[in-house]
Image 1 (tube, rainbow, N blue to C red):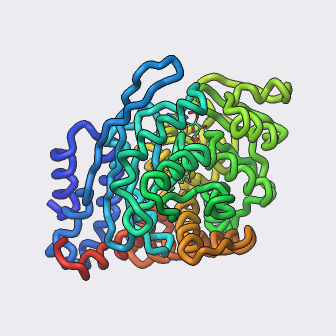
Image 2 (image 1 turned 30 degrees about the horizontal axis):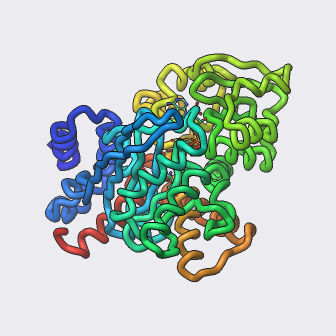
Image 3 (image 1 turned 135 degrees about the horizontal axis):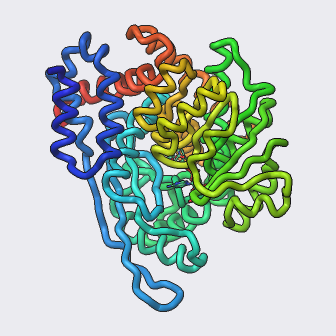
Length: 444
Ligand code: NDP
Ligand code: 2IT
């Protein structure tokens, strides 16, 4: 029995009822085999046993009062997973599906993603089972204030720096920042994704989507393909999806779909992003409203059908396990040449195997969506030096980071005998830096 397999069995036994966490750990540990065969020192130092156990897990009550005067109680989480290479860093997710297993899968992925960015940030994640959908601004504010009233004591600009994720955007970050500052009486860069008037970085809003397309573009170029003239299917219509679509169009592609948890739109002429931004960013509406102003477009209820739309490139940008084996088969059948993961773990393990067999180029989330957190690290740098860089400057740094992530993961895949397997390349490259830092710091 291999070291990685043994640790995986321990993880499954010790963390019952957390299938998403098991899935994330399995994918990483399996792909580390070629590295662990040559680096026996990792086993001696118990690196795997330690890296799969969060350094700290915080679970807390979040009481608040809704607009009808009723008391509501949600559950808050912050999992401080690994601080070997920097302060814990990672988003907060507000979604009714949130439970400890989701936060742990996201926090675990974040360790390696953050390492790949080349910036000094550790891995963490948090959130709540609070559902912002249909809640008034006042309710969201009271929830965020209550959430931060507990969270503030665990975080800090050199300790743990949260940001956004599903259900947490500029509005929520603003309310949480205000409450943190009020409690601590310190103006400091404790959150990223802040508004531009109070310490936010230009390009942070666009960064995950732009970064995804920069990385996919590198992967295509490296394989003598091009984004220009291609047809792109994007799922989701949130922060990542919108700015992935914007950059894909800027680079000459046509984006024909977007979705939310109710259904998807198909616009053969190319999605009008101004309409999507108005519906989603301004009105917080549903993607189905798109057809009201674009009658030639079609709306289909349900999420899975989106992968039946013929495309050259698919960018899942909504949520975990949204692209399953049936979706993968449909993509291949329709001639899809590349998949880039904008969301975290959007592709099921079975679907990944099918895409591999079908020779579809595959950019894994840890690398492909790292532009968001990389730009968060740039926001932290700007906060530390009390300066703001221009849009062009941050965008250029983001692009450089994505290009170097691609080079790092494809070189690493080659070095460990799995040429072209960017999943293995990303997992191994992300892991080595963290593992070596852990080795150097002793058994802690
Ligand atoms: P948003 O909240 O802005 O948007 C999420 C989108 O995904 C919405 O369109 C939402 O639809 C849809 N969605 C959410 N949950 C589900 C579900 N269970 N089934 C179907 N659709 C769903 O989030 P982001 O765009 O920020 O995040 C999207 C993904 O990208 C997540 O996996 C996140 O972890 C990942 N990510 C985000 C980064 C960031 O910087 N924001 C950085 C790196 C990764 P609806 O409105 O109906 O819920
Ligand atoms: O999954 C992610 O990388 C994020 N949600 C962004 C985290 C961050 O700290 O910017």
